[in-house]
Length: 410
Image (cartoon, rainbow, N blue to C red; front, side, top):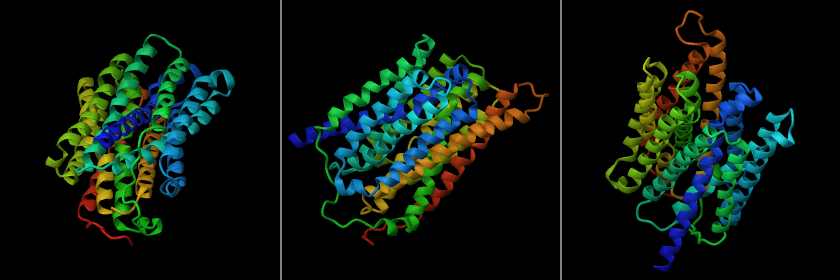
């Protein structure tokens, strides 16, 4: 009983860790318009910050994929929280430390706290996966639901602060307190080890395995499907649909995050009643439909509704792929989570970045005869082309479903 209670504290620390991870990923996009107006950044520059965020996470995932299994989780997860706090502090101080070169300061700060984000996604899933449990998919889905609850908290608190005209440096400093608290929590909680003493599948064998290759592309396109909607909707609602920022963020973006969390929470509670492969396939297909509606609908309320519903559709594309791949490659170790997280980060970085580039390009070529502005046309074009991501996710999940499990160490 005592060990069970202790592992509950471990889960709590991981839940908080995913809230911190949500702040690492979502704070900057919510600040897109304030940063654009205050410092004159372009959409391409703002999209570049997202690209840097996730590319840094990819680098960290790959760099630490092997050493984590060798040296254990604790020292790295504690370091991740400390690094996150340092990165947030530099982001907050950038206007004062990088006068006339603010973008460089934001890039450096983004690299630092994104490195922490890479450690979070590398470590949180295998930490939870190693905790003794009869249903591996349930605690994993619950863990990832807390990313969505964290996203909602980041949206609500940050948007309200922007509405109250609180300086963004103070906002960032506020979010810095959470990783500081979690640093001390992870110093104390027990951490289990999965398949201790059993040989792990070698990385070179794993990356050549068809199951891993398919899962890698499935999670990449699934992550792009989630992140383009989650990271560009704040700007899309304000500048594409001309909704007040408070309205767009509170209804559309929070609605998206709420449905994202509910999908993961529902699966975490009732997961044994669902076929995860079918959930991933149909979720991808319906997400593509939502993208088309958001981009093409002449009615703002319909675009908002599609944005919200898409949160449910994409909710399991990332954690569900981890569960399926882990089940099919049970002795791959933390390296599997690390490299799949790298795949997710590639999709989550390239997808939103390309959306920013397509948006800027479409603004420049927007027909003058349209009833909407060039900026509205550009944002709609960016979201429209992003509909290909969930379509590719569906294709790879169909292929992954048909692959047999690998139960032996190769």
